[in-house]
Amino acid sequence: MGAMTRTDLAPAVGRWRTEGHVLGDDPAPVTGSDVYEPGPGGHVLVHSVDVLVGGTPVQALEIIGERDGDAMLARSYDDAGDVTLMRVRIDDDGVWHVTGGGDVARAGQFDPDAPTVAVRSTLRIAPDRRTMTALWERAEDGVTWQPWMDVRFTREDEPVSGYPDGMDTDSTPPPADDGPQETAPPLPDDPRVPRLEDADPTRSKELGGAAPAVGPESTEQPETD
Image (cartoon, rainbow, N blue to C red; front, side):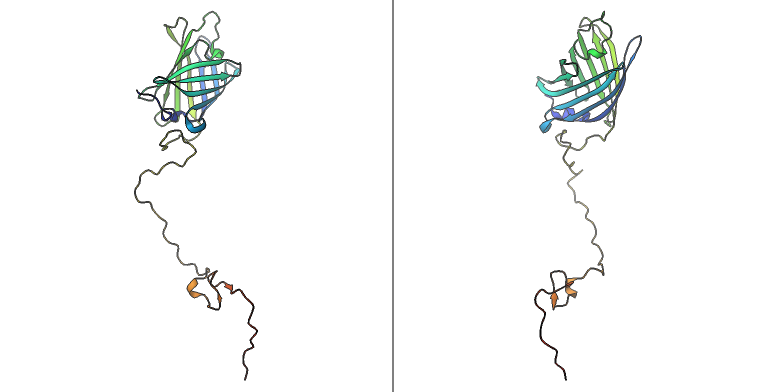
């Protein structure tokens, strides 16, 4: 595909419940939440991570969107002080392909005798944008890949849709078409509301004849026989 745009990132925008496992002989659970939201101007995606990996709390902030050829870079800053860099490419089917070095997600690397030199992930977003699945793989030699983490995300808000630029979640979505818009039928006359044509000409018309005219009262006395 050509150069990615922020529209390609839009399907991930939202709040997600995160559930999964670090795979192995003794699988470790992964639970928590992930939030994706547009950065200033909608030019980058801000990803907040708050999960437990095998009981260890992990928090991170990731910025996705810096251009890198036909892909984008993702820089992550976690609560352990680590800064990691990954490369994100989204194919024509909307599948995310993420690659990074062995320093990515150290909390999920439990075996010191099997050091990781490279990781990769395939993220698939369901057509209705209500679930996502990510399969992470790791390589000890950079060539031979093995399953590492299997994670599922369930949306906790409504999917973003109908936005022409894909990331402008604060604007009102455009109408479905440019055809004639329905208008409400006129309300029937309410007898409690005075009408201008029924007003007494000696009384103010500013409120439809409902208020007396402004000015001093007449001092003339009516004639008597």
